[in-house]
Amino acid sequence: MHTAGDDLQDDFALEDLESDGLAAEVEETRDYISEEENEPQSGPSTIKPDEKKRKRREKLKERKKRKMAENPLPVVLVDSIAGHSPSEISDYLFTLQHKAFPDLSAIEIEDQRIPAAAIMDTTAWTGPRTLDQLVDFIMKSVPSLHTRLGQRSKTNGSPTLIFVAGAALRVADVTRVLKTPKLRGEKGGEVAKLFAKHFKLSEHVTYLKRTKVGAAVGTPGRLGKLLCETDALAVSQISHIMLDITFRDAKERNLLDIPETRNEVFQTVLGCPQVLRELKAGKIQLVLF
Image (cartoon, rainbow, N blue to C red; front, side, top):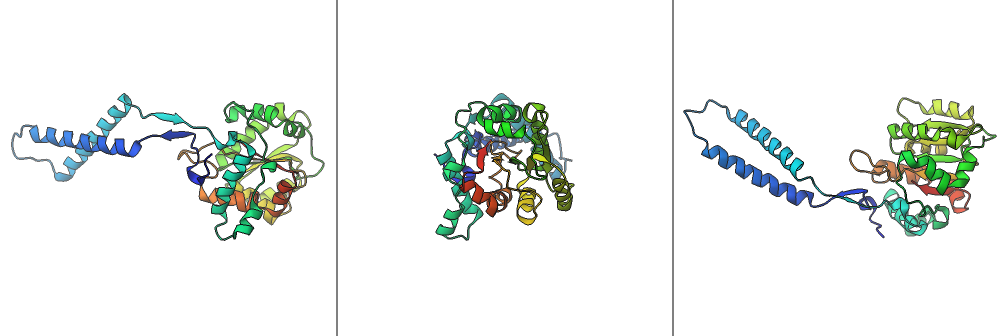
């Protein structure tokens, strides 16, 4: 098992990029220069030095594109930490918690540890953890959550599920999936979409205080503020917190690879005193998707 924090288990890993790419670039440059030297000169050159450099760069780029098309780089599939056992996930998260709480003592950081008993065992799920599979994942791997999503809370702002995603666009995509009647039925509560872009914190406070919410999907920054700084997002009915860990952004980073979002997840969402207490008591289950 890996416990190397940010370097842990990318879903897609590229091998030998730097060495192969550098060697190819050097070789291409040599070929190009030798071609230039062998070209016949008809008279004094009228091309400016800057123009020569520009043309040389363009020619190199074209050669790289052709070479990449002819010899695509190998892509190696690697599994996600989400498919590992609760004890392995607990150790993995604990390694990242050290990064989120660098100033805590050994005893203090141990108090932040999320025990394996608080982590849902989803190793039986063998399908991909992608949005088109989220509904089936919940129904088959977390059936108790499926049941609760079909029931309307009696209290405003008291979701049964908190889904933590890394960016506003991802929050919007997840929200659309969780709104499906297949999950909510006819009686399920609303699905709250919570992120800072375009929405003030006060607007979300007002919305939650007047809305019966079944699921709250949000970025860790906004969820953390609502949990720690307001009473609008209640912890009392939360049964599951789902981390969107398998999804990777354009830079191949997951939710916990980015220092800012990682710190917000551990310090203000999972580290919210009420949430951490309920996790340790077994009243909230952590699910990695």
